[in-house]
Amino acid sequence: GENVEQHPSTLSVQEGDSAVIKCTYSDSASNYFPWYKQELGKRPQLIIDIRSNVGEKKDQRIAVTLNKTAKHFSLHITETQPEDSAVYFCAASIQAAGNKLTFGGGTRVLVKP
Amino acid sequence: DTGVSQDPRHKITKRGQNVTFRCDPISEHNRLYWYRQTLGQGPEFLTYFQNEAQLEKSRLLSDRFSAERPKGSFSTLEIQRTEQGDSAMYLCASGVGGRVTGELFFGEGSRLTVL
Image (cartoon, rainbow over all chains, first blue to last red; front, top):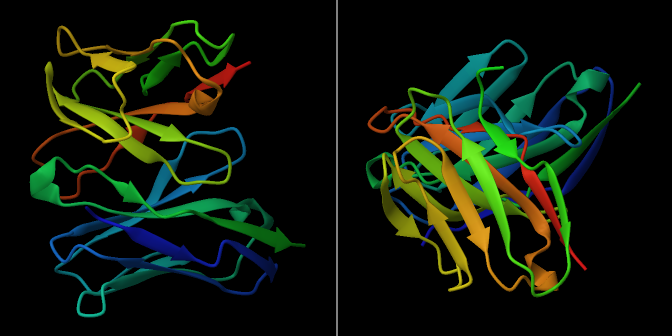
């Protein structure tokens, strides 16, 4: 089955700096890659996603890149703010196989004011 | 709130007791998923339904776990003869099958503590 690895497990950045989280996946059939943000005690919420036919996607301060050949994808957060502090999870799924998400282990991001 | 709702939010039980969690998905969503999340880890897939049919179960789902979605709406997850290793957050998510992007909407979770 699919295996998703996520690095780093913790990331501390100064407010205004950029943060980058990297994930690799094992199943070349995976074609949908979402990123979820989970604040303490809250539900995971989708912040951005990308399909396998797209190399990059941006939404304001957040961007995701995908390298299908290398089977890795990354989340980039620019101009970080204290409210970006949370745990971020990458995931992968095969749309034709039920959209069952396989999650990475998570990255705890701390933005220091 | 018209999102995914779960009940109870917290459950403390003694080892060996049975527990049941309920999930009410977003009404127009035909797919419903159960995940388990332990502290510091990502959610792990347990099982999913399309309408009332249970289409896949993870190897993580031992014989003590059973899930149902009898009318294709709400779902229940029952754990029989609970063990301390069952302590975790049980997350429910719903989505619409057939969409290319496949976004899942999560509930707040049901936290289980087995003493």
